[in-house]
Length: 63
Image: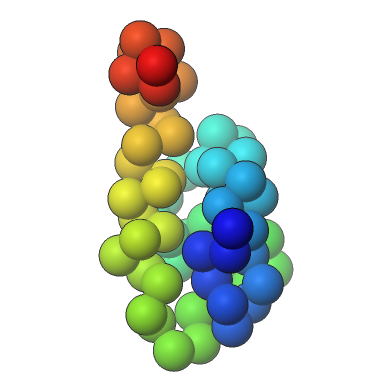
């Protein structure tokens, strides 16, 4: 599933980047060589990033 249509960023790619890089969605997008275009995805992207990082801290969270 795509999280960001404008930049063709898939949720799985965003999750992987969230494990590798610090910061919010805009920061992670920059690390992927992208930048927000329309901005409609940013809230969802921040949620995905937060969820992925919480799962790293507490693996039971991912279950």
